[in-house]
Length: 273
Image (tube, rainbow, N blue to C red):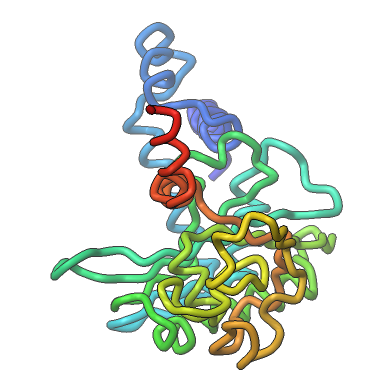
């Protein structure tokens, strides 16, 4: 059936929620002031569920007892075509890849792999802008990543190599960035543990014996993870398609690491004295 005026109104507000980041609180406030012009949260929720149902029908998913995985290219294409973007995509689509382990102690453990569309601008920090590609039950580790997360990484590698073919026939370039904490970076890139003696830096080839030597300046090494068995490289890098310049450490653990740094601790003590 053709859309009624009420249907059109719901779609317009849904587009504002999706593309401009309008909150449900604002929608509710406008509905209370102008009930004829703004849909209720119930109508909006119903419309969002219908969109989700269409998305699930369009995507290629692999679901087992241990792994949930959605095919990266079809999911990304759906997001670009149906979710809308704050800034229009012309020639490049920038994706932020996030991999992290969840769970502590005896709680449920899992590893998640998700993406955010950087082209969306500030609204990408919203919870609903985090798009799950893969979730695996189990503790994070090199073996789990290689067996269950690598298939998703391989799909992203092909997506970046070939670009994204949109439903309108236009192919756009895909650029993938990676954000993770130190532990995930160490495991995915195949590096030795940080606590072991040797070359344990994720960005340069400094040896742990020289990390307190401030007279030496170590630079980021563009080919840090290319040679297994050299400079702390224990296993093959699983994200060799993402260069060092697009690998980023998330902020929280980085700050915690700086606050515990021995050199800065002594500097703080000197300042106190």
